[in-house]
Length: 319
Image 1 (spheres, rainbow, N blue to C red):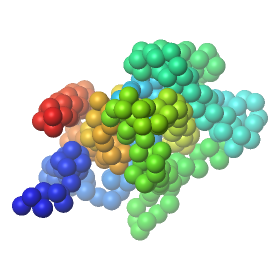
Image 2 (image 1 turned 60 degrees about the vertical axis):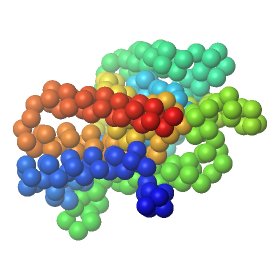
Image 3 (image 1 turned 90 degrees about the vertical axis):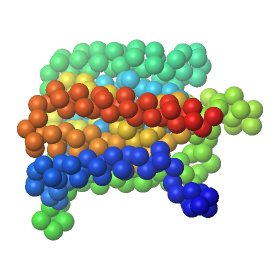
């Protein structure tokens, strides 16, 4: 029996998959359209922006931090790249790189404030959330940027697998998750991320440069927010200064539902993908059932509290 337990994955890893399976079974009994391949492809398209933001959020939460600015930084990146292309005539690739550079710069600022001045990540990113929002509104004059070059929207287009349309952006999201999963699992620098979140002082004493690891995590998260900016532009076809209003909370929700501990050092990035899909499945399924959006928010909030409570209880039980 003991050998069997050793082979089984921990319940924290299985939990998100079990929750997703239960949700899918429930909604399948409520609406026959739910289980169609077309509907699942739609769900993935709807969560691809939050899903990519959640990758960066996962990295930060693994170090026992949090980033409240991610949604607004993503919106700023989208405005920068679309305005540079539409209003200033820059080529799409250069404009995209500039947008990602801006989001990475915000990650660098967050990281420097956390590592050099030792400010709490919550306070730092709450401040940069407001700064990013203000810059976005000022730079765009609170106007939506249209006339976006076709190259910026190509990831929003689709290809067919059988009779099902699949967005290229969905494929990009899945590839990014696979890459970060490999990085965290198979590389020394990836394991350092877990070590810093688990016990930063002990990690520092082993010779690992904890401040450099933290700074790298925040910058890398900013790069992922930039990629999410491109996916947002590709999906909507415009640069929207009002984007990102709820994506920060949605990304944190996805990470928490995916089993990553808010206390750092524990979690699997693929769980965040499952968490994002759980949120997408809930909203899609409830919409098909005709449930008002306010109740969707209510149920999502309850799930987040339950996920954090389970994590807290499991940590106490492990002591």
